[in-house]
Image (cartoon, rainbow, N blue to C red; front, side):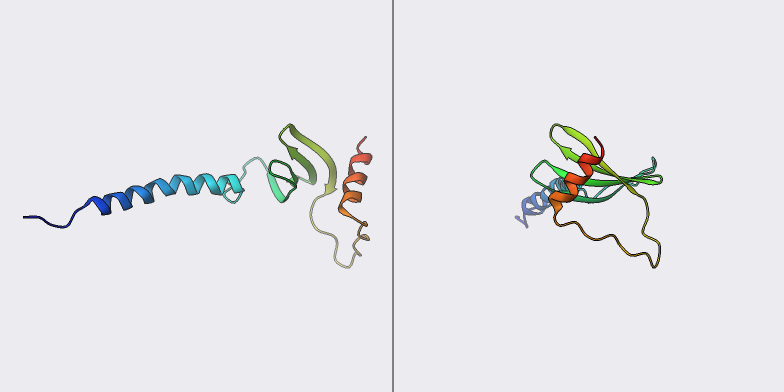
Length: 110
């Protein structure tokens, strides 16, 4: 007496179980699955500049830090005030380009 084989069912189950850790790793790698921080440090925004380089705005307490993250390390590029602007306050005029923003922030710290 031969019945249906359990082999396809077991292979499908093993495939699904193997995909769970792979999906968790991918979410952590992409920065989408960040655990809540008890230290009071929070990533506000990220801008990828290349495969291993990015700009990150981190909020800690009353300050926001602009960080440059690369394979060689992390460097503070500037400090921003925390929170949003006051209601009714006019936003500052936008600089001409992204390069000018980075240049202004890096020359101020030196």
